[in-house]
Image (tube, rainbow, N blue to C red):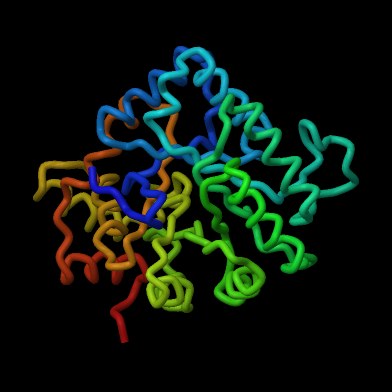
Length: 297
C-alpha cells in the first residue's frame, strides 16, 4: 500500500478506513471492531478516520473500546478525528439546535473527550469538520497551534472548507493545515473544476475524499450509463466496479486519499483492490464523461 507524506512528521496510508457507520453495525463489540482493523492492516491500510459526531457521538467510544481491549493496535495505526459540529444528540442533547463551534473552549473540550473515548494519548490528525460562519480565526488558529505544541494532536487540517475558508484559518496559524477532506467521487465531481482541488495542488496539500462511492448511491439504476463503463473496465482488469471507481480517484495527480467506510467484512477485505486497477488518461476521461453525462467542452 502506498503512503502519502503529509508532512515530515506524518504520513498516512493511501486508502483510509472510515468509521462513520461503525455504530450502525449489529455487532459493535471490541472483538468485532478489532477484526475490522486487522483486516485493514492486512492490506496496508493503517489510517482510521473518525469524528466526534459520528454515531450520535458514540463512534469514538466504540472504536476506543477495541483499542482498550487490544492496546497494541494503537501503535500500528494513525487516528484522524474531527470536531466542531454540535448537534442535539448524545452528550449535546440539551442544545437548542444544530450549530458549529470552533471556539478554543469547544475544540479543547472535544479533543479531551476524543482522547478519553478512544483510549489514546494523542490524535494523529485533527480536522475542523465544517467551515464555521461564526469562526474567529484569531481564536481558532492559536487553539489548534496550542494542541499541536502540547502533543495531544500531531497535526491539524480541515474538512469541507472552500479555499477562502482554508486561507482565512491558515492566516492565523503557525502550524500548517495538512489536508482538506472534501466530497469527491464520480457522483461529486465539482472539486475538479471549482478550484477546490486546484487550490490544494498549488500548495502541495493532499486532499482526502469522503463518500468516494457517492454514499452508496453510485450503483443505483439511475447511473446505468456510468455503471456500464465501470463494469466493462472491471471485467477487463479482473476486478470489481467498486475498485475501479476508487482507482479513478487514486489516478488523479492531486494524491487524493479516499475514505472508505463499510461494516461488511468481505468488502473491508476488498478495499485494497483499488490499488490494483490501472487508469490511464483516456480511461480517466471516459469515466469522467460518463459521470457528468456529456463530453468535455
